[in-house]
Length: 91
Image (cartoon, rainbow, N blue to C red; front, top):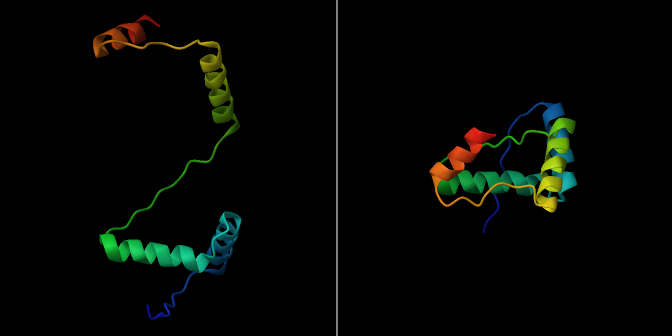
């Protein structure tokens, strides 16, 4: 495969943040950009995903749910959807 150079402009802060994230992932920024271009070229579509940052409240809720699961404080299994909805209506 013959390499081609792509030049584009972005603001300095965005470039620095992107390089920092790529570094934390252990992937060169150029590899990430190349993978994005490859996906765009192959699929003809654009995909953006935003992960919501974990908050202290979310961490506490997850820890509580994991503890409930560990001690067997769970609902179900249910045989039908109606059975599940009846249970949900009762709590």
